[in-house]
Image (tube, rainbow, N blue to C red; front, side):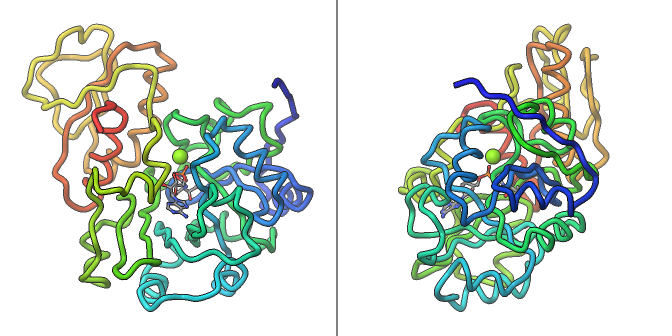
Length: 318
Ligand code: TXA
Ligand code: MG
């Protein structure tokens, strides 16, 4: 099906919220990546998110709230583990999975009886959500499978003519998606590594179950089944002391300078900067039609755990 809508660009959270209240879909900044939002209680609007992104219907959306009281509209009970996480990390880059209330349509949760909720700490997101007045369901604002967008220009690149509005904020400060924790089971369970490191979660919830492949988690966190974060170029995990083949049409991103010169390279001053830059770097490599992207591996500690997870997925070896 082909469709075309005029995509309005605005820096006004209030103007952007009017599209939400008219049943539209709006991209907006958060501290992690840009989201593509719709009123969580409007099934048609939710359908348009899946259509615009070409997102598989079995991949649930995260619901964004502007104030804690909105949890009452989305869930019936708050387990003690969820209360602890919310006290420590809301507003911030953490998504808690809770039992959903009857008001949350199944299209938002991909048929699950649970709902993922988060309260962004980005200032413009807060103004936007306050103006919307309703919780806003939003996956990342990229075409399905592509790297998540960390700038409004990256959203425009993927979704111009497919969504109603883009709220033009700053480039996102974290650059990787939120950490997802399921609070509906006997023990809290990490479903997706992300911006809040597991080390921080363990300080609050020492008994948290860490995600491990092949233990049925794929069905619990359906989004992880799908192809993700992929530029057109081939992603190769790389140690900067190693030799690369074919580097003439290749790129490098990492922290240590490689031995050889690549066509395009980005040397980051920290793992944080690497995490913040990696998705935009993937997009730039595609704009320049490079064949391969060599990505330096990092230690799996702090944000490094989520960064390595995204790199493995982009390299399609997870
Ligand atoms: O930082 C983020 O999380 C960004 C911003 C926009 O908030 N959102 C985001 O959404 O990256 P995305 O495209 O990754 O999709 C949401 C993911 C799903 O793929 C799934 O892994 C998880 O959140 N999720 C959402 N609801 C869930 C549920 N009820 N049970 C298990 N996992 C869920
Ligand atoms: Mg996504």
